[in-house]
Image 1 (cartoon, rainbow, N blue to C red):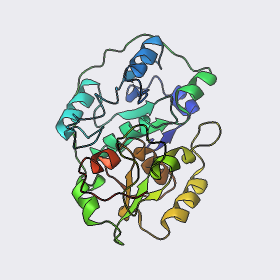
Image 2 (cartoon, rainbow, N blue to C red):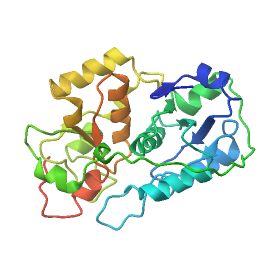
Image 3 (cartoon, rainbow, N blue to C red):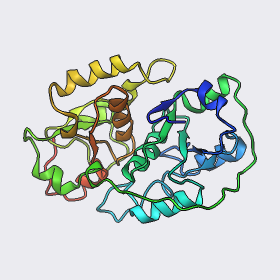
Amino acid sequence: MGYTTLISVTDLASNLGNPRLVIFDCRHELTDQDFGARAYAESHLPNARFAQVDRDLSGTPTGRNGRHPLPAPEIFAAWLGDMGVNSDSQVVGYDSAGGTYAARLWWMLRWLGHDRVAVLNGGWDAWVNAGGPVTQEVPQPKRTRFAARPRAMAAVTVTYVAAHLNKPGMTLIDARSNARYHGRNETVDPIGGHIPGALNHFYKDNLDEQGMFRPADELRDAFVRLIGNSPGEQVIHQCGSGVSACHNLLAMEIAGLKGSRLYPGSWSEWIADRSRPIAT
């Protein structure tokens, strides 16, 4: 197995018995922290482990580092090892939100140097609609060691973003809805608006009407219209807290626009210092 962006329901179903396969259920709702655990307990894919976004895919918020800061690499690597992930594993993540949370898992594994990770295209709904098997049985992973090889250039800090505002060396893309980008209907963060100079590409626009990722050429056309000739390495993705921005990172990889990076702190970190500029 060598899936590095998306995996189809058909391909995942045909590989369920592969000992190298490690599946994570990443179902989550921002307004209900217990939703994922309840959904997982009710039923999940065979042998799927549960990844709680606020606990397993995030570090500890301090009030100044955003709502979903990254954990220390060694802490995340230890958790992956506890879940049975090693350098030979093919990891697959799924959720019930178009890949929003599974894409965070996808990016975090790539951040630690593991490329053999994919998001189930269509997620939980596509699996169930296709008649895929589900279970309530909770797996007992065999603990192993995950050897992390952190990629320092995968993410940027708030200092980096502030130093490159409105400069040609950085193209910033905000993954939030257009309303939140413009500071309207802000119900998550205490201040509305966006980082000055940021462009807007709502991550849900990466999906078609069935909740599947759009074809690579359509994704490429959409991002090229936005970023023009900017090389992928100059593109920085952000959102409210560094989660849905990973969806745009995945979409660009699918489109062949490689090398873009994440600003993990995103808007929730940016506004923690009231001296930083905002735009509406």
